Every structure is written in structure tokens, then in C-alpha cells.
Image (cartoon, rainbow over all chains, first blue to last red; front, side, top):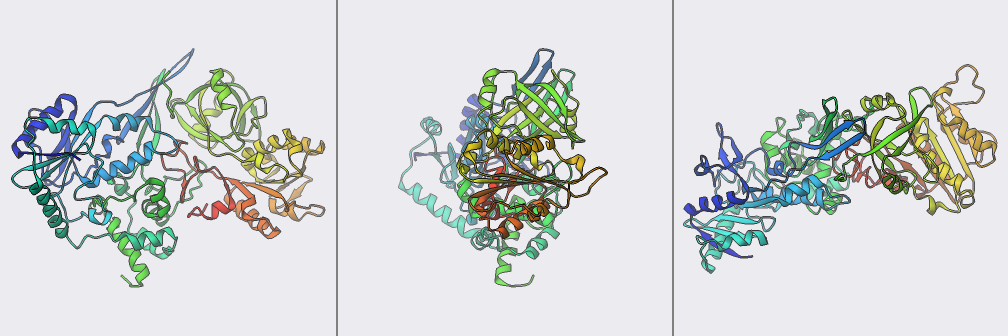
Amino acid sequence: MRARLINRDDIVKLVRILMREYEVVAPFCSRGSDTVFDVVTEENIDKIQLHVRNPIYPPKRFVLPHVEQMFEFQMSEVGVSAIPTYNEKPRALFGIRSCDIAGIKHLDNFFLGREFVDPYYLRQRRNLFLVNVVCTEIGTDVGEYCFCLCADTGPAARDGFDLQLMDLGDVWMVVAGTERGSRYLDLEFMARGDDSHIKLRREILSRVRHQFFDKQTSWFSAAMRLITRLEVSESTWEKIGRRCLECGGCSFVCPTCSCFTVDDRRVSAGKAIRMRLWDSCALGGFTRMAGGFNPRKAVHDRRNRRFFHKLAYQFVLRDGSIGCVGCGRCAVVCHGAIGMPSVVEIIRRQELGSQD
Amino acid sequence: MDWNIYTPRPAIIDRVVDEIPGVKTFYWHFEDPQEEERFRKFLPGQFAQISIYGIGEFPASLPPSPTERELFFTIRKVGTCTAALHELGPGDRFGVRGPYGNGFRMDEYAGRNLVFVAGGIGLIPLRSCIVYALHKRDQYKKIQVFYGARTPKDLIFLNDLVGWQQSGLLECYVTVDRATEGWKGNVGLVTSLFRLPGVEVAVEHSTAFVCGPPVMFRFAIRDLLAMGYHERHIVSTLERYMKCGVGKCGHCCIGVAYVCTDGPVFTYEQIKELGEDI
């Protein structure tokens, strides 16, 4: 992989050059302590945040929108036309974290690498330019709920990005991950580095890894083994299920969750649209069939489903990666404190036999 | 038209036939003859996604055999989309996507006895296999159908079954959970048919097809295994809520499998390994 150096003050020049070809989306501060990805304009370009809490609304929405129109149906006497509505606007996601890069990779495998290729996902994905920013600042980039080390997705993504920026202190390193990212390394404000910068990168990454808060861990191995072998007891799932409020928040903030429902709406006498929107297996009606039969009626069965899908080895084989990237968002939003790390810990303790 | 994997293909209803109360059969064809030709290569056990434009889309089994002349769906009115379909008549348009799913491997069962165990409208997907086998009768040995429904008026395709039995093409045993006036046939669960005097359920070199409500499924499997069936030779078609039919929306998963792409046909051996109760 090719790499260059860039001065902190020149990063905004890189953003402006990206703005010529893409709609650039970058992290900004929002109300209170919230952060959000928003479109970069000349008015807000100086407010882009490079070291900031990872926005809670996950960047998967740039390849799998929360609400997405699939078709317009035009109905007349002579027939029905089904016109697909594609979103093909070129977009650059500036400041996506390494955990979220792993999430996009997981979704790529799912939507593009199976029996059928999803045409809506494909068009958005190939028009998406990813600029990863490595997490180097504990307390801002790395929050108290982060556990990317346990999921082996961070703090620096190894691939899956077009460009990667890393703060080395006096200067930033820019790494190209793809052909199209590589072109930007030849810009006049990119300088060559040397071995000392590579050494510095390694030192910083080592320091960051060692500084991860030890209270948020998710030792996946034992939990994956028990889940895969169907050895998690019913009472353990019930214990987890009792804490679930069935809000669906975990699914909506998760970078690897991809389930959606499809809905038709009549617009006028001769026109209807078909949309898809994010859905969650946490919700009671997720598997309910017309006629009333619901194979996953009990809350704890739905919790079982979530973690089976994310951690069972059969799915890891099938999807190419574990269904958790360690971003910690589920732990942040869960009212019942049963985000991934909590559930993994409850399952581990089942095996260890301790009461809690 | 730019068609993608989610595009409903235009179809037109030819005629509608009332079956049992709440169930209608819709004979239809694709607007595009090329689409029809492609679709007709479907396998027994596959399904299609039916679109009622502006209302919604839902999965439906394909009851015709690919060897039959006409395409049709047999649908019970049970929710929003099926209710909308029940309002349609000859000449009305709707959308079809498919065929999806893995289908039954009817040609691999050549030389075997076929035992069909169906409950209620579970006979609908199995009808495709039965007719396929009848159209290639020499390829199979004994064909036995064990069919039960709640009451006599819930027995679907009954005339077809009686006709095939009278022609000596298959053995057919029918029962109802609850008799009504005029019913002179068997009364009891479908599994009680196995124990009727004179009935010899084929077990050796046989494949059993089971389709019906979950509770019936459990008892039928239990009895078939007790008779000596191997789990590999019991096959079923499973159902789940589906929104896409192409393995993306996630609604139809059972454990490790997506019913729409890995199924809907599974052997009992596979069902046991799915990682979730059906």
C-alpha cells in the first residue's frame, strides 16, 4: 500500500478536491455531545471534526438507507410499468471509523456476494468513496463503549477503505487502500515520508491499543462456541430477554444489521411506490405470519436469534466475518444493558457457573 | 423496462375458481411470453412472490406441476394482500417474481415409493409433486396420499384425489378432525390413517413428503420415524414470513438457513440441524 504525509491544515484541501467529484459527508458536532455525519459545504467545511465521538447513526445508511424507494409503479389500462429508483449520487464518506469499515465489508459480502446481487446496494456502494480516520485519541475517538480490539476491526482498518488518515502528531499519514484512492496521493500537498513515520504509526497504534478501557470487553470465543453448539440454556436467554424492551435500537445502530421490510404505498389513482425500510428481529411482529402464527413470539427467542445470527460459526463461515465490529453502539443505546458485551459476558458466566 | 431481482413481472388473471371456503384458485399467464417460457421451468416445491401493486407482496407456493398446461396459484384469504388478490378477476393485472427456492428433487426419487402426508392447505405445495409423479408414473413405484383437514369442507383438491384413486394411479386415504352431517369417511388426525386396517404405509425405498401445520408435522414425523423411515428420506416444505424471497430481508430465517434460498424444501435431517425450532 502506498502512503504519504499531509499537514493537518491541508486536510481541508483534500476535502475540497473530493467535493469536486463527490458529495462529501463528514463528522460534525451536533447538539449536546451528539455527533453526526452531514454534507460538507463551504459554510461548514471548517467545522469538520477529525477527533470526535463516532456518530451514533451508523454509516451503513449511505449504502442501505433507512428508508429507500425501490420502485414506482405506473398503472394504466394498458398495463403496469415498474420503474426502479436507483440512488447513484457519488458520495465520499470522510471520517468513517475502522469498525464501521468492517461493517461495510460485512454488508458488501451479504448484499453483493451471495445467490443474488442487490442492485440498490450495488449502485450506492460503487459510488461511495471511503476515507477512514484511524482512532488515536482515547476519550474522543475511542469511547467508553468501544471494543474494536475484541472484534479485531480497529483501531486502524487493514483494508476496505479508499484512503486512510492517521494522526501522527506533527503530521498526518495518508494511506491508499484502492486504485481510486491512490490517485489522491499525487496531489501537490502530499509529501513523502520515511521509515520513521512507519515506526511512529506502529508506536501510536500500540499505545492506543493498550489504553482501551478495560471495563468494556467482549471475549467472543466462549460465547461463540456455546452459541454455535446450541449450548446456551433457555434460562440464560430468558435472563437476557427479561431485560429487553423490544425497542429495536440495537439493530438500527448496528453497522452489520441489514434486515429490512418492504412496503407499498398508493400515491394516486395510477401510481404507487414500493419502499424498503430498516427492520429489526427484536420486534414482536418480525416473524409473524398472516393468520397469526409467530414462530418467534417470546422475547427471549428473539434475543436468541439476534446473537445466533451474529456469533454462530455457521454464519461467520457464510458471511465471511463475525457479525459484530466492536463499535459499541448497541451498548450505548440499550435501555436494558444487554448490548453485545453484556450478552457475551452473561453467556460466558453461564459456562463458568457463576450467579449474577 | 429495466428489470432487477426485485421487479415484479406483469401477469394477467385468466379465470378464478372457488375451492374450499376462503380459498380461490387463480389461473394466470405472464404478459411477456418469454418470461412465461423461462418461468415454466420451475421445480415442484418452488414458490413465487405475488405483487398486488400498491398493496404489497407475498410468497405463494406453486401448486401446478411444471408438466401441466396452466399456471395457477391457490390462495387462502388471510391478510391484507391475499384479501386484495381475492378481489381480482379475469383480465386484472398483478405481479409475479420467481420461481424461487430449491424445490423437491423429484427425479432423484425415481424408483422409490412416494408417501404424501398432508394437513389442511398443506396439500397445496405437495400437489405439484403428486401431479408431477402422476405425469411420470412409470418413474415411481407406489404413490400413497394421507390427507386430513379440520372438517369436510376444508378438504382441498378432493375431487382430484378421488379421481386419481379411482383410476388406480395412487392410494388415497382421507380423514377429518371433526365430521359434519353427511360425512361417511374417516374421523381423526391424519396420522390415524397410518393405522387403518388394510393400510400398509410404504417404508422401504420410500420418500415421505410432509406438509401441514406445525403440530401435525411433529406427530407425522414421530410416526414415520417409528415406522422405520430414515431422517434423510422425510422431506418437507417450510413456510415463513417473507418480504424479498431472495435471501436479503432476513425475515424467513430459521437458525442457519434462509427458507427462501436454502429451502423451502428441507429433509428432516436438515431441519434437525437448523439450530432453531420450526
